[in-house]
Length: 512
Image 1 (cartoon, rainbow, N blue to C red):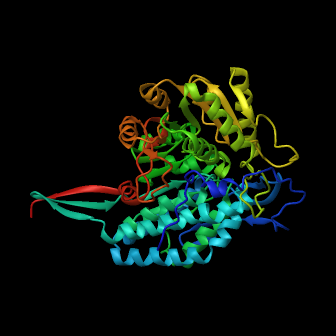
Image 2: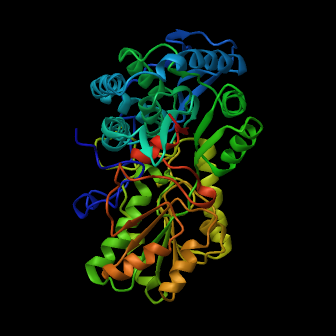
Image 3: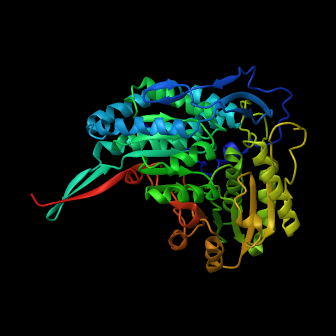
C-alpha cells in the first residue's frame, strides 16, 4: 500500500497549486448542504456500545456557520473505570496474541478504513471546518497511512533477541490511555492506536469533545474489523471529566497525550503519583530559515511556500513553520512575497470544492488568535497582510485573515507563543550563527525548516537545530521517521518503528 504523503501539515504547496490561491470566496449558503443533526449518546466499552453513567452533554458546533451540528455525551470517572476494567481483562489474552494475528487485525482495520474514507472526511469537514480537499487527502489519508506503516513495521519488528549472555524481550506495556486532539483528529489517534494494537496493548481512548464524529466512525471501523472486546475502549468527554481520570488512573500503565503544553503539564502532574509512562506531543513555534544563497524564483518559492504552509489546516498544526527567519537585508523583499501569497489565499466555506482555507475550530480559538494579532500590532510589528477580524464579506463563521507580520523580533509574544492560526512572523538575522541562535531561542522544539542552495551549509545548520524533526528544502513528511519534540514540545516519539517503543517494556532474561 502506498502511504499518502500529506500529514499533520503538508510540505509547501507546489507552484501549480499556489496559483489556485487567488481571492476570497464569499459563500452565501453553506456548501455542505442540509446537515442532519448528529447525536452521540453512547461510548464503546468491552466490545459494546453502552450508555454513559452520567447525563452531561455538549453541543458540537460547526465552525463554518457557528451553529450546532449535533451533540456528544460527556463521560465521567465511572465510565473511565469501566473502560479500564475492560482493557485490563482483555490485556491478559491480547498481549499474548501472535504477530500473525495482530497483522491480520491491522489488515482488517485498513480494509474497513478504506471503505469509509469518505465518511471520515465529511465528518471532519463538519466538526472542525477542514476543507474538502484536505479532509480526504490529508486528514483521513494520514490515518490510513499510520495503520499501513504499523503493519509494515510489525512484519519484521524484533520483539526478542539474544544480547551476549542474556535475552532481551520487548513486551507490551499494558493498558494505555490515549488522549487525542481536534486539529488532526484521526491522524493523532491512528499514530497512537496502530502501534498499541501492533505491540499487543489495550487502550482507553478519549478523543477531543470538539471533534467526536470522526472518532465515532473510527470506532465503528474497529468494531467491524472485530477488534476483540476490551482491546479498544472509547469514552467521550472533556479534559477535567475524562482526561484527568485517564491520566491519574492507577489501572493505566502509560498515557499518550497530544495537545497544548499547558494541558500536557496537567497530564504529567496527574500521572506522576502512579509512576506511569507519559508520552507527549505538545506545542511548537517552529523556525523556518531561508538562507541568503537563494535568489530570484528560488527565494520566492521558499518564502511563498512557507506562507502557504501556514494556511494548511488554517494554521492549526503543532509543527507549522510559524517563524520565518530571513536575511535582515532582505526583509522587505521577503515581506512583499509573503504578503502577496497571504492576500491570494482562498478563504471560504470548507464545503467548497476548490483549494480553500476554512475556519478555525471554535470561537475560543478565533478569539485567541485575534488577541495575539492585536498584541503583535501593539508590540510594533509591521502588518503587511491580513490583520484583525474576518476576511471581508465573511460575517459569520470562525474565519481568520491570513496574516503576515514583518520586522518581528524574537522577544515579541507573537514570536514566542503558539498562535495556532494562519499567522506568520518574519524575523531578520545577520548570519548563520545568528539564525541558529534565534531558531533555538524558544521553549519549543518540535520541528525546524531550512531552505538553502548549499547542501553542506544546510546540513551543518540542521545539526545545530534543537528540534525533533528538521525538514530541508521543502521535502515532504516521511511517515516512517520519528515524530516528536525537544524541550517543551514533549517527550517520546511517534510514527514508524520509533512509535512502537512507547508501548513496550524491556525485559532482560539472564541464564538458562
